[in-house]
Image (tube, rainbow, N blue to C red; front, side, top):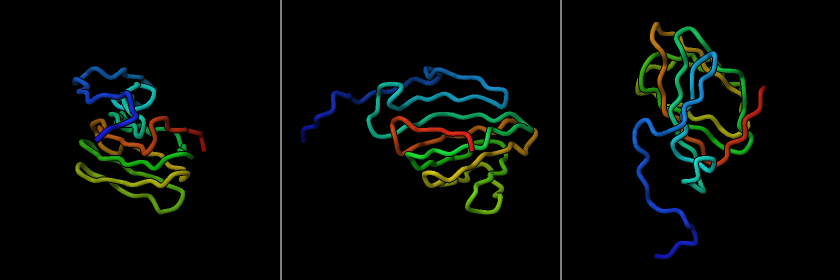
Length: 125
């Protein structure tokens, strides 16, 4: 099987992703177009500090999957009622649906987030 892609199989070592800190928490993207190791998706770690929420936003060009590893979240999306999430829960958010999450636990919420695009668009909602 041949491929037109110039990408190669790679391992991204733990801690190698560039962490971006925000007032509400942090993001660290390990895979994606901006990182230069995928032409089809984005994957990273997101942390929301206890009692904090990320801003209400939408991704117009891609779906999102969020897998909650630790902590608890209340997830708000414009197309459904608020949803409580605990460790091991997964949420699917279709492209264009505005959403945000608030950490409702006494410890930070840690999650893995995947987008169906290598360069996700993000717009405040």
